[in-house]
Length: 194
Image (cartoon, rainbow, N blue to C red; front, top):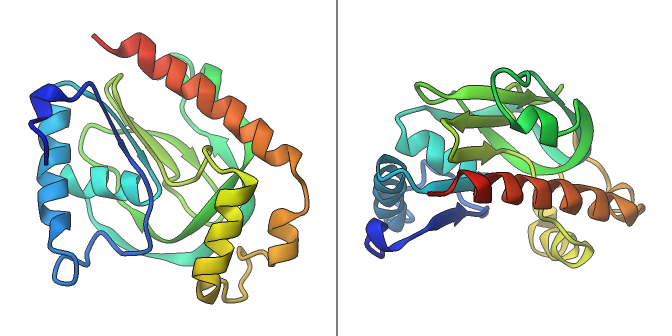
């Protein structure tokens, strides 16, 4: 791991493993320590899916199986208001986003819950102005979703919140919509950086 003092931003993305798989993936311990140090140093930290779970775990919160797998395009709703977070102005009150997860997290201490969905109570949180965790994906592209389907198809077990490959890939404008929201989130984080 680099020295956290040499990092301006830390963006932690997803992966097929669990945050709790430290025996199989010992590097997870070092990554969690690095995340905690970056947060303590006041760095901008953004976690997406597994990345959000890693932030939560690094800050002492529990990670465990969600009651439902959530794979596909499903809405989230914002539960924070503008007085609590500027993100309430950036994220639409209710918006369809892309999901691919089977686990969830408790909110870390001092975290503000930002969003929820019907399948997963904790979809987004912030810790102060510079730390964000999103259980969902705003960065997806048609090719990244195709790669997910190709490499993780075995996770697409039928369920209430698991869409078929056809449902997931049928509407291209969804990607542009979520990418625009992600650009707004990144601009927001850029304005909080020292």
